[in-house]
Image 1 (spheres, helix red, strand yellow):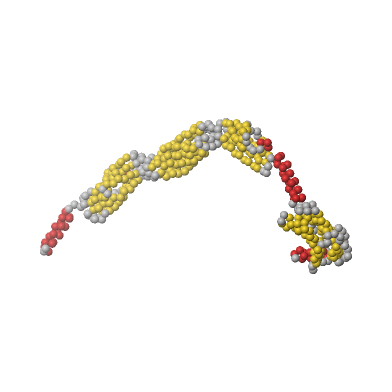
Image 2 (cartoon, rainbow, N blue to C red):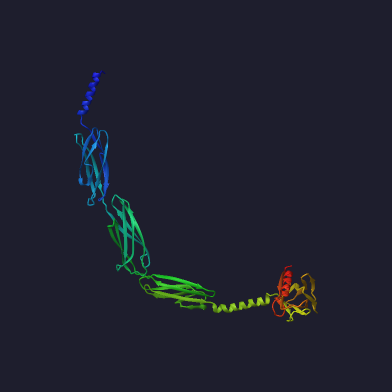
Length: 473
C-alpha cells in the first residue's frame, strides 16, 4: 500500500470514530436487596464508557429512600464505581419496592440503567408463647420456656424481663437476662424458679417483656394454676450413745391446706421405749398420726434406753474381769521383806525373806536374788540357796522342779553390813522365773529399802551403782 492510501485509511477511520455516538453501560444491570424497616442496605454500581464523560445520577422510585452521588465523571475505558444506600424508614410497610438507578451523559452519549428490587421485610420480634413445666405445688421446682420469634431478616439482641405473681398480685419470682435471635428464626429462653412453701392456691401470672435499646418491643402474659395440696416435709435426726438411742422427727406442712401426716419408724427394744406414744404398733413398726395446719409443724421424739438392762451386766463382767486379773491371771507372786527397820551399822544383822506363792501348776521354778559386795551373806535354817560370788556381790539362786497350785515357799537369809551407812538404801529386787503351759514367765518383787528414813547417802548410791552393774551383766 502506498503512503497516499495509508493516509486516506487513517483519515476515514478517524472520521468514523468522531462521527459515531459514545457507548456507556452500568453493572449490575439488575439486583435484588433485602432490608427491614428502620434499617438500611447499600449496593455498589459500576459505570463504563468509551469516551470521557460526566453523568447525571437520578432515581426512579422512592427517591427519598436512596442516597447516591448527584453526578460522576468517567474516563474513557476506565470503569467508575459508586455506592447507593437504601434507607428504609421504620414506618415502611413490608413488601417489594422497585427502583431504577439512571446515569445520563452530559455529552449526549447513551444512558445506562440498573434495576433494583428491594424486599422490605417485617422488623417484628415477638414473645409468642410461654410453656410451664415442673411441680405446680407449694415448694415445687418449675421451669418456664419463653418462645421468641424474629420475623425480620437481621439478628436481634433482646433483653428479657420476667415477673411471676401470685393470685394476690405479689411477686414471688423475677429474673432478667438477654438473648440473641437469628434472622427469621425461633428461639426458646428457659428460666427456672421455685414456688414458695405454703404458697396460695389459684391462678399465677407470668409476665414477660422483650426490650431492644431500652424500648419494649414485645409483651406477653401467661397463666398457670397451683392447686390446693397438703405437702409433708419430714426431717429425722438420730443420736446414739453407748446404750441410748434418741430419735427426733420434725414434720412440716409446706402445702396450702390442712392435712393428716402419718409417719412410721422401726423401733427395737419396746421394753426400753419412752417418749411420744405411737397411734399404733405392728411388731417393730411404730406409727404416729398428726394433723398439721398449712405451714404448721409437729415434732415426734422418743428414746430407747438399755441402761437399766446393761448396767447390771456390765457390773458382773467387770467383777469377773477383776477376779481373773487378781486371782486367775496372776500365776505366781513373789514378795521380798526386810524384817528389821533400824540404822545400818557395821556388823548389824538384817533378815531378808522371799515369799513365793503359786496360783497355778508351774515347772522349772528358779528364784534369784542379789546381795551387793558391801554385805556379808549369812545362811539361816531352811532352804539353802546356791551362791555365786562376783566382783559386785553375791547371787543367790533357789531352784524347784515344780510348784503346785496354791503351794507356797519361804526363803530366808541374813546380811551383815561391812560399814555403817546413814539413812536408807535401796536393795536389789528378787526375781522368779518359771514355766507355765510351755512358756517361760518372770515376776519381780517391789523395791525394798534398808535402814531408817534419814536421807540418801553416798554409800547407798554406791550400792545402787553396784546393783545396776549386776543387772546389766
